[in-house]
Image (cartoon, rainbow over all chains, first blue to last red):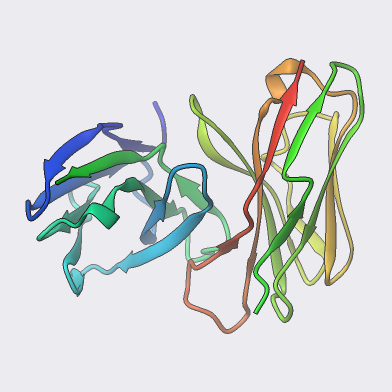
Length: 111
Length: 115
């Protein structure tokens, strides 16, 4: 079983839709959580951190459920430019240098 | 500002040949990471350095892989001898000592094909 699991998708949604991705992690000692975004044939980039209390950045909302060991990302009012692969990322400990990446969920937003 | 620089961007080689991938981190960043990405396994950390010192190489698949960081502005990942299963995209990333926790800046990657 992979340490970080994501539905690979693709999620095909129209512009303006709300879409949510979930991610589960197996190591209960994991301490830090992030979402990265990777455009097709490009490098990954940090999208946002995920805090225990949940956090919002514009149209993006990330939440953490430690009891169930899952992380979610909600995107409201989807734009064509949101089309990308979203990588769920976990740090096993407070050492956030050692990041464990999920294989990603692909989102395709169509007009 | 220049981001992380990797070379070559594409490499096609034959099985058994030596491959050397190069990385220049962002100036001022003191941590450097080498990752490998494949469709099946996703993005995997191979090795990382803090202040030019290797900290964790537990992700290096086998003795055919080696990495060095002779100074703060340069690192290499070497595969010798290369095998077809090494075909992947290899990313180098760096991190600032004062940056956002968990934020690593990735280079554009080297797409390696071993025939």
